[in-house]
Image (cartoon, rainbow, N blue to C red):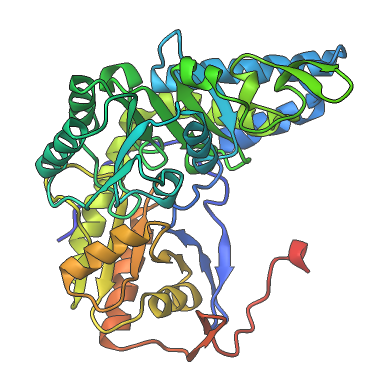
Length: 440
């Protein structure tokens, strides 16, 4: 018997009461179980952005009062992010578009010949920027202890020179927490730096880069309830200061001079060195506000999500043929669960959950194709695709219970509607649901 959830008040999100149409003609409250892809906007973030918009202007080089206000909120956001991650006073805070952008910036900034070690189970944002003969990809581990041992051996065999370890804080596929502090101790023993992909960690758990002893951290606003197109890279300034700008243009340049056959360029110092062009003031401000809001509610957030995660796992365990994907089974987890259903296509189930039950989940390989391939093989699944349910501040017990009941019905009785494949995706046939008016 599933126990009632503890009464915990968490920050409210925009769209919590959103009604979506079903193919049957009914309308139901949307059950958003896809927080791991993009979280909804916090109401406090929305309100803060609305307050800022009349003052929005260009930053840094504007003499007008609105420009001064925008510059102030932009730079204050750096301090909010710094506090959120527990950055060192010497660390730089570079605003980017998202985690992918941040990790690509770091990859462009490491010294030539840097030996990079990472696991092949990383999200593509962390996996793909690092390629070439100096990169060693370690096979998806079967336990956290095995992961630490594998990293130790890889660093011991790495060439002399600068070294960098890339690690995720929480798996994009399974939600499991990686042994980041243990990795950092190993890295230090071998004179290596360590970069933390916190995209899935930041929305769910407080962390401190000094306590973890990591050198860099990257995460996205759209994962932490600030979906306005900003991300961040925080970390040691020396490599970033020594590298040419990631993008060139206004803001990245301190001075440009004409020498006839060439231009002389003096680049700005970090962080402006890697923030060329007009920055995303609104997105950065939203990111900073979200950091502040989450920082004030960690106890409630964790309690809320852990109760829902237990309820979700307990319910999924009752579904015939359902197998959850797991890396370690020996660490904690944030609110992300991926699973397969024997004999049923993940895309087909996701389409039916949406069309008939108003439930949003993710299907596929979650931008972590190697990890999903290896983990589905462990479960004996024939297709290298899975379903992922992910919870957050907008999730309720009813959402979880609706998903479990819907999956049980789909497995035992099948769908109530016909579905066809179009452009490689399953969709409801003869779907007459209407889009919202702003898309008309």
